[in-house]
Length: 256
Image (cartoon, rainbow, N blue to C red; front, side):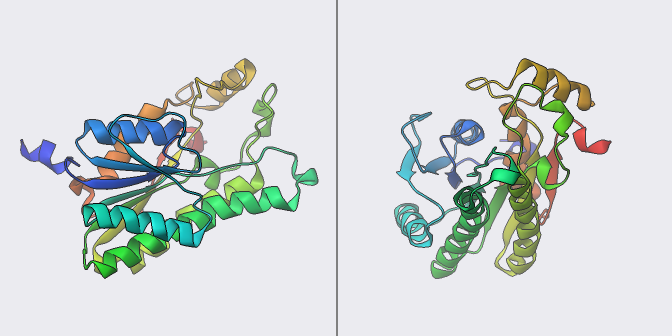
């Protein structure tokens, strides 16, 4: 193995991917498997998008106890976890004027509280085992940085909500906070902020895609695979001096 390939290698690393059965989560699991990592996927429903070679646990990350119990089982099996990918997240698409409290709370509970429980459990178990080298990659969003342009939602009811954006902004700040507070433990914490990703299983409207593409300098939506290079970089030793960063992968959308 050459110096460069070794630098970016995650071979034989142990990883946890949350939201593992969603669009980006499944692609991340697949990429990690191909790169030679051990992959454990957790999701509230692991019955879809399952991959051979991935160990799955049903997990609602909004439950502190459930997160710790599942993470403890994974640590017990492997003796360590090198990489934590906090990918699980939800949104709500109803108009904010009509939003019920339970939908507001669900987005907060999964996106912010759930990410916190995962980081807390990961760090506490790392401390327990005195294993002091790890990498956390949080999946934020371009809408944690800018506001959606509602003019483009002409045939797409899935308008990104203010509470989704607020939680993703919180993920970016949480990334900075934990990067500082976990540096002494040699646990790096970074994030990526994807722009709009095309969903082939549940396609966005044709007009929406046209409008989004006009709004984006690269004139198209992203593919899930285009997030993987940054995720693997941040999980690997190539990013050994990179922490507290948020890599924006949006085709230039946030540049104007």
